[in-house]
Image (cartoon, rainbow, N blue to C red):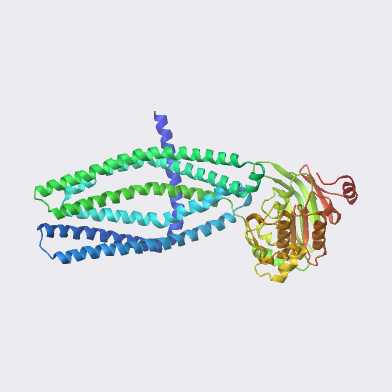
Length: 593
């Protein structure tokens, strides 16, 4: 028995420590909005005063009507109406101010969290499903922003309501306070019993929401594939399975909530009817008037309501801390290091005219799961060169490009940018700050919703129409763009719907060329082009007077004819292929394996 108690104590202690860390983290956001919180709290306190004042006027009104008190009936009635109207207007003002402040705080926190997520190190961030990231950013951040604004002010307002009502009750007849507080022990006990289960349920609910959102996001993004493989019924079945799991989880918690609600409801009835019976007895005994009894019954409800509101802050706080923990997990991911931005910008400006070379030496990389992809890799590429990376799928070509973009970081070796042809000795380490040196065309369709011109200006906001046309010409895209009814103002739908894969690839290449970065990375970027168009695109890149260094990942043989060097990745290593071997390969194989 003692062992079980010790284990429960440790679990409870661990939960409380975790919640305390989350509360401290939430406080870091809350203190930024202290002015908004004070304003919201002030409105709530004034509203509480109006409610109490209305109870006092109601007492006087009843006593005047029943003859227990002399006074001006019309004047008292006017005060009652004025108090009710004032409270109504104040409530609307509070709702309006609360909405304005809440949306503003929500937007600010979401923008900040969004920026921090984007700045997180890529590899650990990639372990999170897109649906999970969206759930955390949208639902959990909204819970956080709402809690930051409302939790502490509501606690102050409810405590003020309770104390004010309690003081007036005690002032007039302390015996009523006993009945009004009958429900406190039961309420406190129920909150203690349900707190842990609420926290566990909130975690499970958030995880389940993330799974469902992730499934829906993937399904909607891949409708074409689902239809092509006739997977509609299978996907619908998977969704129903997730929904059943979600329903079972919710109903399990709902049963506990239902039992809790019944106990709390019965307790409320006990308090209300006890107060009502005691009030009748005190009136019958001649101790209090009808008006005072009416006031006591109203204040008894106010006391019970304020207490219940305070107790209901417990699940609200648990939901808030659960969301905070899920956001903290993302923000605790290591952030990318942009400290070298100024140095990188100077290096770029100094070498823009002569271009920049790439050099990798003795590079080793293994993913966090321990899987080694590259070992002792060395290569180089210089301005006005197209360097090809070839090899079987899974040999690490895309991983190598991610190393160049500093999305991944090698465990050994060096990756450097070198001024000009690399002979000057001026170098710059490859870090996230050096991404300004790169234009990148990844595999797949990477076009965004919007016009063609909007997509182009994503990488160069101040690009003129002539600059965009020139980039489209270099990528052999102008011929089909100019034929469109709206030309560059043609709207592209999500994931480039309405374009062929080849057209989307050419637009992606044009966008990369428009940026005029010193280094161009093409990851199977011409795979959907016919051989003639592919050759024209690569020839245009080679003939461009801009001192661009180009690295091309390909499985096709045609581009190798114009490449300055070809590196073959095999068994985690990289070697430069002699020209004779390339020519022999082109004679004997239609494509690279």
